Image (cartoon, rainbow, N blue to C red; front, side):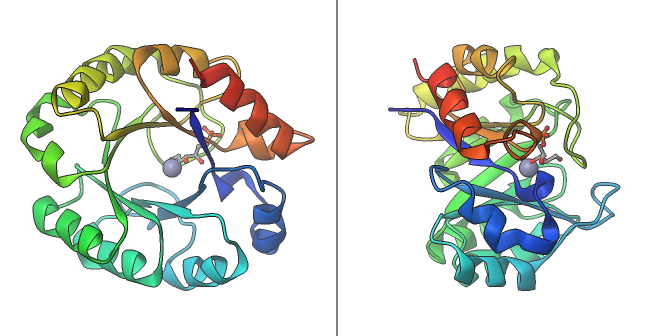
Length: 217
Ligand code: DX5
Ligand code: ZN
């Protein structure tokens, strides 16, 4: 399967989101970073903006919730029509219930780990998730440098996922560029979030094609 690319609108022009979505017609997903200034030291957007964006684009929305209370909010994003909703291990208090609510609302359930969070303690949770997101920067901002220290965890996560049947997608987010994407793909990632590498390019659609080519085995 070709690698999937999920451009992050965090690096797009927030005053023109519908146009920015239209600039990446070849994207597999549109990655939307929801930040609450509590879980991460930055504030972006919430449900009303996601609802508006859902009406403005046919590209499926990949919601990454960097918020303190994902148990309260995640189901609403799924019910609104997001194709995928990801909650953080470090924030969720009842991940099994919340992941099940995301799925029963018809979205893919994602589970995210910060760079310093181990994957092994969550092995028993794999039956509840459709995508594991491994952060390759500390969450909160676009344009940060890729953390190579996460590569061994991507490999370990790939083996866990394979042992589990191989259906779960493995997403990486943070510092993913033409220089780092091959390392991530080689370690076992198959869904790639890229903010500045896509929206910082003169031609975002070509940047996506190039990233996909580099990451597809
Ligand atoms: C960071 C966000 C990322 C961010 C990635 O906390 O989760 O999705 O937009 O931006 P780049 O690709 O520029 O590192
Ligand atoms: Zn993100």
